[in-house]
Length: 110
Image (tube, rainbow, N blue to C red; front, side, top):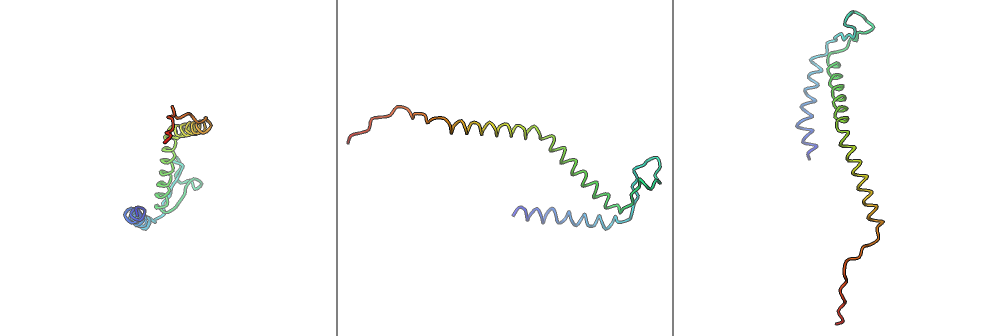
């Protein structure tokens, strides 16, 4: 139910906006990597503007995801350590002999 809601409320309008952006920005533009000689054809790429916009969005998402993953590394390490500790405790409990339940009461003879 929540997935369908997210699809309808978020992703459908987002897709419509991205399609409109692509249609409005389909003019070819030159992207050059040589700031000192902008006319250098070896380092110039001519593509529609929306491709550059989508590439920038994708690269930003990848870099942001990697930064989040690196920043949360200490939490993953702590979770692994606690998982190993919990498993060691489970194994030590299963190997331990059964402890007596305390003093036993005499059975009634009725």
